[in-house]
Length: 242
Image (cartoon, rainbow, N blue to C red; front, side, top):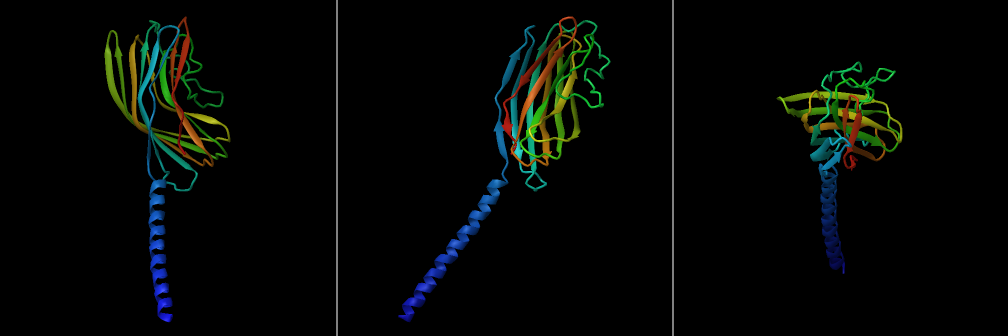
């Protein structure tokens, strides 16, 4: 009887060892799945202004990654996309107005990021694109770093110009629960009728200090100045950044 009992113990030990190995393997798999990047394709968008000006967004995507801070309160997304605007009705004397090239300054000296509010009627029209970022609860700070590999081009009726721009913009602003902030990717002055394009790839949104659900969505603003002032905004589909 003792031999049978010993055999049973050995068999139980072997089963227990297999179970432990399985638990360790599952643990590693779970950690890998938690740290995996998530690719989010986003739908195209288009809006037609009353004047007939058209804004389009296409090839937009987001790659959601774990924050390198690894503190449970960080969110990182790498965003890419292309924005075009078919613009007509630009004033013949369009030049940058008194509001710093068409971007209005607030009384506290900060810059409006969500478009070009405050441009005088004789200022230059402008195309602006970026992302709206918000967090659910108790954000002590939102740090947005837009590290750009961006290609900018403007094909005009009477002339053409193209170029590339690379750089980074650091945004550090306080946020509280329920608030959203605008992170501007790029803004381009429009001095003549034509088709304008802003293209960006792997622009980084790094939100730290977010204790709850975080979400972002793209925005594009076309502001045409002159006697028939017009401001049109195209919003993208919201997506989770953790």
